[in-house]
Length: 556
Image (cartoon, rainbow, N blue to C red; front, side):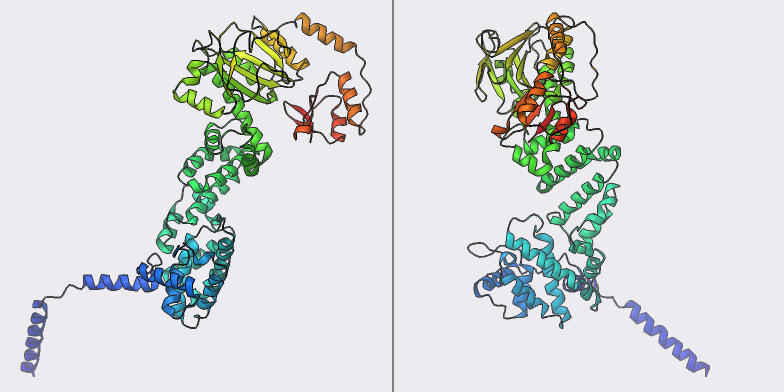
């Protein structure tokens, strides 16, 4: 018995020795090829059909014959559904009859899970790539929405098919991509800097950087930011603008969202990054040709907010950068900044140096003042500049060189015509006191601010910006005192809160020395230059007027 056991043990030892001595073949390459083949066929959606020529032939034949004779043709057309083929170039998704017919053909494959899954995979890739949310092609957009409904309808069914594909499971988990707000669920995570969702969508669903999904992810990030409180939202504006600059196709939508939210903030202090970005994209809101775009994107209120930012920047540019001696004129700058809301229009007249300079700041100023920038002529004007502001019925002209008075003209009788390329900065032009439209010259002597404030208040019915306090440093000049005393002697009629016609309104406004601007014949509004707390305010409200800070009451 022992001999038998020993003999069996020896035989096992010999067999083991032979097996271990035999070289095991390297199957790594073969296993890798098999893995890739299985992923391409079943699990990895990022890999499609590599036979691009076959896809092209199938799509062109379908566009020509309108027939899908084999499953192979149907599969290839699904993978090429959003690509352009033929002469002229056409896309199946933008065909009004062939695309619905393709969906019907695929729906008929539901009893053959493998074939249905493969076609579904091709359609899904097309859905993610075609810019249906922004497409101007009516049929293409309509078919894309139909495709979205088709994919959503069969998403759950696809997950039940065995074996369950990884990409099908991922699509079910992210089935929000097949809805109206596809990326909204990701906004809060992106807001915290969590970018894991981006990597997951790329890895599990094969979503590339050039798909609409990436743009929608950025928009969801922005929308999540707009839901924050004011202070938290403002902290997000700069990084979001920088993010949008990497996605030029959505910058218009993104900027509109940010501007509308910023306009809703209690504190709408100028945001330099947001201002510069929107001016680069939409140009100046002062240009008549640009206003329709501004109003269409963000509405009138947000447009006026940016206009005010631009006014303040222009004032700073003039009194800081465009000064002849290179020294900022802080007093004049701060004074006119306080009246930025009252300024209705701007023009610049630039001397030769400023007009021709290629320095970045000068080029920027000329660009943002396009259509409102003239060349300033005159023997000594090479290094001088002029700043023209329309307030009420007057245009105030300040010069860069110190010791120049501010000349005031009637806005409807100026020494230049809007749109002309040059104007003289001398007594033959902007300093022409003999011109029929010239009204006054205000000098910048000590305490000059009080004289300017009095003229602005009485003649132009303009007051400093909201929440700006103007110090009363000096006793008003004789002109202001006389004008003020005269106005006090006029009897004020009793104000009744009833509807009035325009003639009655003009009579009452005249008794209160209130100015009326009627631009309705030019498509504008009727303006009454009065404060929100004036005695006449209730009458204006009853007539349908609305109040605009710094400008008065208006009626369309």
